[in-house]
Image (cartoon, rainbow, N blue to C red; front, top):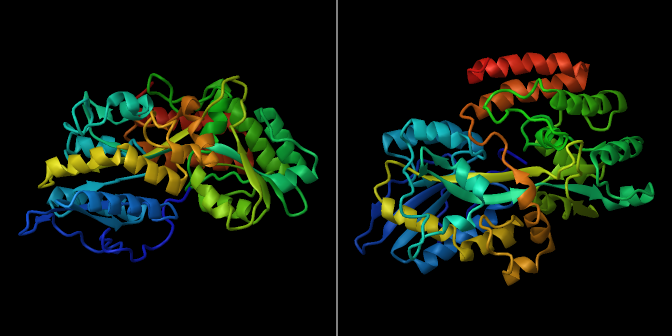
Length: 418
C-alpha cells in the first residue's frame, strides 16, 4: 500500500543493485560482448526481495545480458525518470509509477519504446492470450503495446480472526454486513476497519464500485455526481464521521499499522500486506471483498507497468529481458516470493503456486477485478487533488451530495466534458 517504504539495502553482486538516488550507469557492452542494462524499480518494500531474486536468475541464465537492478522510491522515480530518459542518461528499463495511467504521458512525450518483439507467438515471445485482457488493453495505446506488468495482484478483505470470534461474528459477505460488523467492532480503543483516504491503493473506489458507482464513466466523464456514487460515499462517510469505524486521515501505511497493531478488525488490501501482519503476530484470514448494492463481486486489480526507454542503446536485449520477465520462471519466483498472483493467466496448475494458499486466494479474484482509472492521463492529479480531498471532506463534514457534485464539476472541466 505504500508509495515508498524503505531505503534500499545492498544485495548480491549478481543483481548489481545501485543505491537509490545514485546516477544510473550508461548501458555498455564489455570487451567480452556482454550487454549491461539498467532497470529502475520502485519495489523498495518487502516484495523487493523476490524481484532481486528474479533478476539474479536472469543474469545467471543469460550470461550475455546482465541487468543492474536500481531501487528508487516511487516519488524519486516520478521526478527523475522523465528527464533522465529524455537526456539519454536514464535506465534501459523502468517501472515509472505504480499506476498504469502514467504511461499515457510517457508515450505522449515520446519516452517509451513500443514493444514490437515481446508479445506474440514466436519463440521467446509472450502470447497475448495469457496476459489479463484489462491489463493488456490499458497498456496498448494507438494500437501499440508500450508496457507490460511488472506485477499483478488483486485486493481482498483481511479480517482479524480473534476480534471477530470474540464478538461472535462471521466474516461478512455483503457490504451491509461489513458495515454492521464494523460498527459492532468499534470501541474500547479498537476500530471496525482500517480505511485509508490518502497515499493508498484504491480502497474507497472498491467500496463505490461495489454499490454500482464510479469515478469516471464509460464515456470518459465524471461519475462522481451519479446517484449510486453519492449513495455509497454517503453511507460509508456517515459511519466514519458519526460511528468512528476508522481513524480519520489514515494513509495506506497508517492503515496497515492499525491492522498490524490489532486495533482494526478489517482492512481491504493486497497479498503483500500479509508480510507485515504475520510478523506482527496478527491472526488473520482473507475473504473476497463483500458484494454491495450492484449485486456483483468486484475488487481492484493492481499492476505496475514496466517500460523500455525510447533512448535505450539495446532495444533487442531490453525486450528479450522483458519477455523473460513475463515468462513462467520469473512469474513463479515473483508470485511465490511476493505472494502476488502471476501476471499471466495460464499458471493455475503451477505446483509452487498451488502450494501457496494466499497466492491462490488472490489469484481467484482476477475475474472480478478492475483497474483504477487505467487510461486517464491526469490520474495522479485527479486522485490527489479531486477524488481523495472529496472523500476526506465527506468523512469530516458530511453532505456527500454537495461535495461530490462540486468535485464532479471540477473533474469534468479537467476531462473536457460538459
